Image (cartoon, rainbow, N blue to C red; front, side):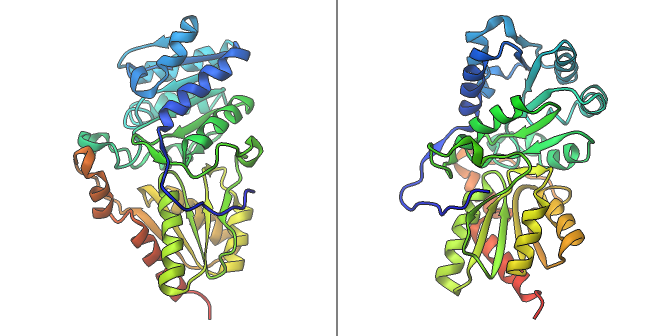
Length: 331
């Protein structure tokens, strides 16, 4: 479990997709088992980098997502470690049956890495704003679900996925995202199934976040400290499944109230997973920040922050959720 505080100063922004492509190229040097399957989005997902370097291990199947998943399954049966990538709206959206029956049921080493999750896909609108994918994949037996907070984490987690047999679903953001972790962070700080405590001294409440909402959770903690004197612990729960139940229970016992933050429907996502863990270990009030069971809408790229604000995915809303959760805490 990592315990650190976010440094102040100007935010550094890096593309998660670029980090994914770079990680595949690097890992491909020493592991010939790694192959990549694309769905006519290889430029966008940056898997073209892998294809340019290892063309014999790159398969672009076109706009045929069910085939993408099934072909990746076949490659895994043949002993390969298959990375299959496209947009989150299409996988799992168009390939739930194939993911369930061709990958999860036989427990194959297929790594589904998708981008364009959540509301921040810009002008593509509700049809491409995937807000239910974590719920869908989390419910499938054998599937592990990963939502990294930044590009540094992506590189280490791709390596961990290669080293861990079985199916994975990793969700990347479309926009460049704030760097949370120093480049020097060792791989041992990113363990699948373990959350990272970023602000360890919080004693009044806990904020548990994933993806690009981790940066906003850190902002909320600063806001609460300065404006209300509330000391909030911040946890990056990058592994949604298996969730770090031990850490969730520890935070519940030590701080008495929890707020969660995710760029996903509050039904079935991180907030639901945390609530389940809390209910089975140490019940405390949980307030969920996320998309409140509604579809999104189109917005120009320069309007994405306003879109997040419209749907309540902000540091201010997280801070408000903490205050509300604390008001319901045991006296």
